[in-house]
Length: 376
Picture (cartoon, rainbow, N blue to C red):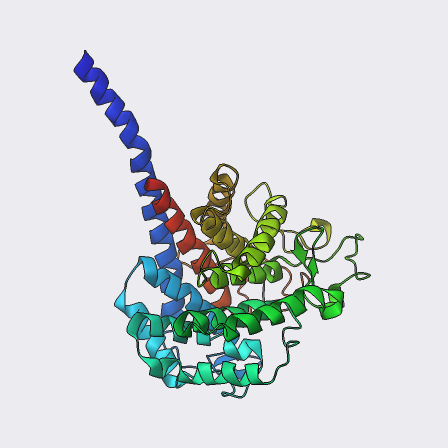
């Protein structure tokens, strides 16, 4: 009888772990399916994008995709991901879009992947151009470059990566000055310290309101900042003086986002104004999942509160947004506010598919890491 009891107890203990492993397999399979769809559809990564006009494939939309692909490679070391990345970067000569003199964060975003490949290979030729570009920007002594919050994600992590490589604090000091300028001064400050939300740029700071009289907080725009904080803090020592400053913003933003999750697990395009532009949306949801998952694993966010939010987010993304062939539905097209790319639907193909896939990969892979973290 005692032996039977022990066997039953062990079986009961094993079932949750088995279910957890099964869920991890499901996350991995879904993530691969989404990525394979994109890599198959855009088989030649050197081909320019053609949305209205030709643009080189190292523009920000594609760069965000490669951020996600590098995150996927960290949990799924498939050589095809590296081959695809290097073919793209080699074609662009590991150069920022529009050359080393650009000061546009959108042009610099590709540098995050160049530096990721440096971390993987130790080959400094991969980062010479992006480092030269950032060094030139620092020499300008201007701090008012990031006039829109998307730019914080596109550029700020590069400064943190270069700091990690060089140990030169000039990179952290400078990017923190730019961050604070966007946060506190641009348009009177793009961060609402009372709510934890960000206005996209000075055009949306009050008195601007949505048609229902509420503030305009764009889901993906807030997601960009949230992802940037993850990517910057990941490069820093937790005892760094800047870490605590960013961590405080991260926690406040987390609480704000968590309070507006929809019942179905998504977030609305317009975070607090669903009557104007509500509805399911992948990019904001995936970026929030990315941040929540990372925050739990780094003991910044309590798992008791945020784990169920992550589970609910993943269920929504995987069950409601992913097509059988791996295409993503509910991806809002490019723009700068909730009204852009409307309507956002399951079957609609957005003007650019790459950043939507990148956001999904960031969220999915970090959630996979969280599930693995829970098994420890």
